[in-house]
Length: 598
View (cartoon, rainbow, N blue to C red):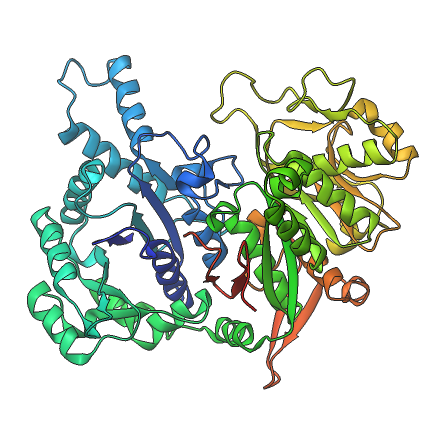
């Protein structure tokens, strides 16, 4: 097994996750099998109980692991399925060591950071690296490890020590360290400054790790003399200094690495030159080119609770991007804070109220993602009502499905006080109730989590046709509350169709309005399994409906080729196996003032 460690210096938020994903992709394109591990030095056992404002979205894996969003990047770039153990946290390591101490496994020893914690980290890495994640037998060839945080952080010191020991143990030809650092440009003089990176590398070396490759984040390509200076002071060969400058979309980062021969530098350090080929990135390049060429916009109103931080909905944004590129449209996301749609805001802040409704009414489609807590729920219900009554394409995910059911019960069935017991435990008409697969008292890991099977109730529904007329699908879940099965008959009689259910028939998984252009709600999270070139079926349906392509998409079935101007094709398969943003752009997604530049 070969190991590639990606560390970060100077400041956080440099893009280590994207860099690690891109390194994995380029090595996979060279013919190697790749797996990934993310190390998060926080004391939480996992990301499940953290606010999206703290760490971005919580990404959910097939096995129910609630993990850092970087594992979502790994899965999307490498098209693999990771496990909860691919995300290492300080909390997990400490818990494992303390459990062993309580069992008496250490035979009376004094349990210390060195060697017990450091040994536990190394054993965890070796064990998880051997788990196949690409559907094939046997371990991968290369494991890409990302160490979260910044070199010098107190909380990451045990991991730095463990990785220093680990690099010595596995040997020089089996370990490659890539250090991602910042080379800022002072706007006053326009000069690229190397001192922050010099200090970062010096700190890394003082901790027992020496970088083989420097990946320098900057707004522009590094000058030759800057590379020479870095090489001299950081003791890194000049050909091993890579510039990660700003690019038009995230899919260009692997191409940036390839063009600068980063794969050759990595393979040379790992003694793998003879076992690989030139990276095959033709389809990836075509997709990146296509993304840059798109001009005709499709506007999606994202009605949510955490609209101040785009990373809170990162997988949803990526799934929308995958679908919009497949439909040859430039994605424009209008961020609509759900609470701004409510009547209370009309009185307290009329400008925000008018702005939110203007964005909602100007959108080609409306998406209500998942969430927890009662803030903004009434605003989401109003968004679902507007989409239903005005025949605007709508996709509700998790809570977005639940509020669509509540809205239908209130408006169509006339049950004015219909609600979820999550928000009103004493409601007379509980449309959404707590279902017993979880715990009400313990928050961490107690929800209905991970991959669950959904069975279609017939093949005529839009969702069944989008998934290729299969009898069932497997999608990932993360929720505690579900549609009340005792109200299903009443809702169906009024025209709401439950087109997907679990194997018992008691858990409602998919809702649709048959006479609506596209009104779909799902209890699961389809965004977690969307991939570039293989967009989620339901996101593709939403974007296709928004730009008038849904009928032709349903007729064509499971694949829709995306043609470049040069005639090459990218196949967009429907799913079979399956940084504060508002004023900037994110990987080809253009956002507006609470919201969006076009």
